[in-house]
Picture 1 (tube, rainbow, N blue to C red):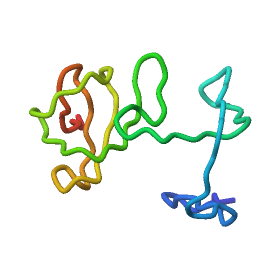
Picture 2 (tube, rainbow, N blue to C red):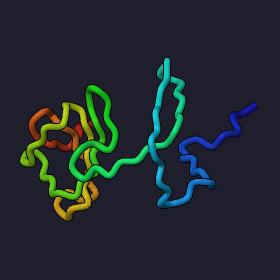
Picture 3 (tube, one colour):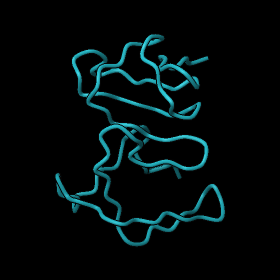
Picture 4 (cartoon, rainbow, N blue to C red):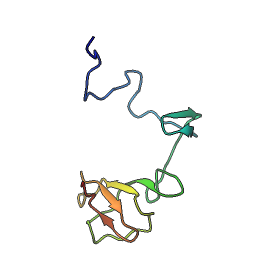
Length: 105
């Protein structure tokens, strides 16, 4: 029997309401294929990471970002986007000192 699941289609949760605040979440998991979410998560960060672990973070910024020019103290591998016209719609990755465009090899 052929696979009946759509391939390459993202799942959208019909119960998720836009603008919902998620507060205090803890995400834990013992393997790379399982995780448990308990509580809720909120971030009001405008300059720091929205979420991070010991090695990298995810940043949603309002400041301008220019690849290979804008400096950062974010850990290597951290990802960022900005709502500023300079860098809007682009994804950036930290190299340890500056934001760069990610390279797909």
